[in-house]
Length: 205
Image (cartoon, rainbow, N blue to C red):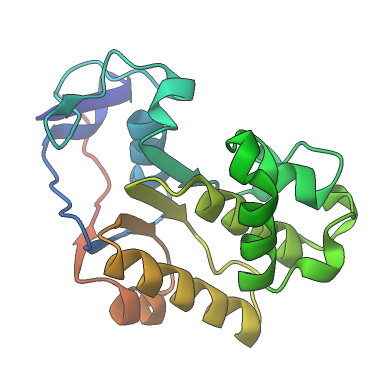
């Protein structure tokens, strides 16, 4: 029952309800300005939820700040530069991981995403496509039960797309729920179990 608007005359969401089950991928599509990234920001706590409920299982996420929600939700930003900050790729992926398991986990993620040769590189020196892949690897390292992917395929070549497919397929097998935000109809058709199309809001009288 989510309601949200930036301008009271143009509600982006009105009594909006969405359930995503473990191991399910839901595609979220629609033209620019319909609220796809806004919804992701509301889920993560970047924007404040004005009304409605937000639960993961029986846990109420509304009282949790961004840092606390990150234990349960991961978010691949549309722009990787809004997500990456560490001086090296290895430190980026390892940030926030448990110390005793960090090195092994970072090594596994680097190998899985084809990034091992770049472990000591500053992410800022990489191309946009590679920064996007690094951001996806960071998202995967968090290993949360729910993941938001905002335009994961932007700038990706065939190898990058295959990396996305493997990551989502592996997550589904482990019961991870995905919200896939994309303009790529082929990717949504391939990966999503169902699709929700957002439409432009109309002004209130």
